[in-house]
Length: 445
Image (cartoon, rainbow, N blue to C red; front, side, top):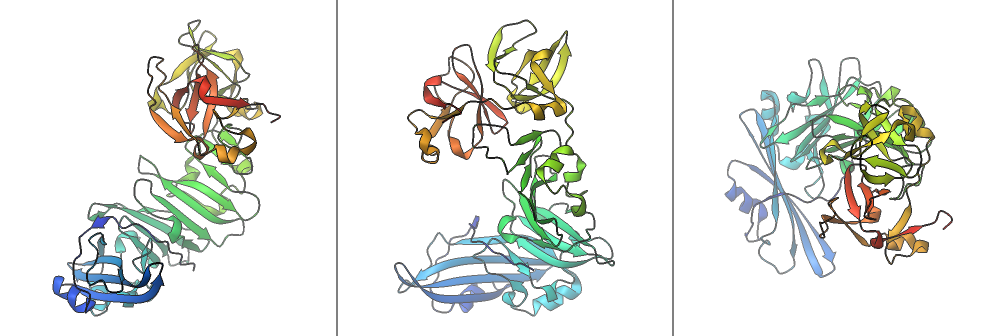
């Protein structure tokens, strides 16, 4: 089993200011009900000799395992710990009576693997029985448990030898209801480097299947864990969003949506319904499984977008500007562009649109560009230029946000009557850019 770790930023701060003579005795005095374990390692840093201290404290009480940890460097000759050293405090983990008695007699590093300078800790395999039963169904045992201050992630095994993923996010000082995958006919290993909670919870696993070696999930605003990315054993990886499959075999840059296959993924991408053996082994197969009904796109350049059927033109759109059909009326389609929250929609004649699966046959004609003053022959260097984005209101003269344009997908999807470009950021939010802030590039360049 792969046990990858990553240096991470600890988030719950407690100031430290203690002498460095005997760390074990010092910390035991401050926490009389906790078992303290200390690792110290001398090393030669850029500014001289240092000692890296890693302190793990545990307490077993009321049917739960409590863990605190801290890590800091102490330069040679310094007698106190810097005030910015930070504790990590983990929500209590349920333990059985037998497990509680066993763990109470041990130093923390006897049963906890890893160290506090990494993104996660884990319970050593031989001490898993009786721990985190909240993650298990009847008849199951834990094969692996990763603990972060904001996430529990586990692999369970049933009586038939099938493996299942489990994940629970912290809710204050408690753990939320775990999400459980169906039993899988493959071994599973959690990649601790690319798994964590925070503002954008994510989970990455390795399997023993021949067709894929790495699968990752993300946690959406509705609390659902969905498939996010698949690394195929042969061929190129692909990524899923709530409205498309992204083909990594196509060089997208920030200019074009040609790498995107539009449609809604079905329930097969949900962690609680997934079957690893039946996942698409390529972006082409994944795109074929999308539900494309309701998606539309402009079929040519210069398509008028109006504020009402036969109404005022609010923009002229380039080919393959993709949206969702809201309604039809006398040969006109009301199309939503970007996320519904951005509330940008307009009316387009039916004959100017492609529908559903036919979007695949429409070439993207969004202009390639660089920020004004950028070098088309050195796009990578130009990519670090900040590009200001403005609201769609013509009278607004201050940018809403500035981005490094290469770090995001920013499509020039059309021109507005006042000459500004209508831009779509990350296929979600609409903004405007004055034409003088970008320089378009001919396809030949």
